Length: 146
Image 1 (cartoon, rainbow, N blue to C red):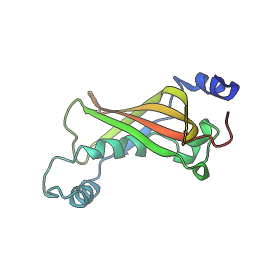
Image 2 (tube, helix red, strand yellow):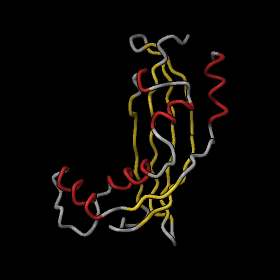
Image 3 (spheres, rainbow, N blue to C red):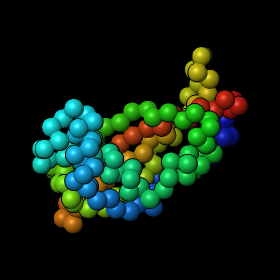
Image 4 (tube, rainbow, N blue to C red):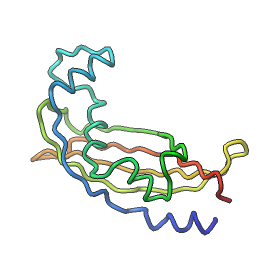
């Protein structure tokens, strides 16, 4: 493993600043409409959990990329995603967002070259319970890495 890859491993466990996100009814309506769902449904679409999680993680995408010595110009890509709803989302509810980096793995592909896969998890909580968990990964190309 390269020195650069080793230097990223201490970031595993780093917590996001966190914050809060209010699931505004108008935003839930727009998302449902854009996804071809019924916008009049009272239950927000499950994708709103991801939107709330990243909306309340407490840093910008550029700041997150910076944690890993990357920028938007490097061409980061969204990798995998999994949302687990522990209870239904509520339109108009405000959720606390917390999370952390769960993994950093350096990979090398014959055609893709060197890249890092960063796993991170964000959780939504209301005033009483853990509502949702969103696990995601980012793919960070390392064009000059060995």
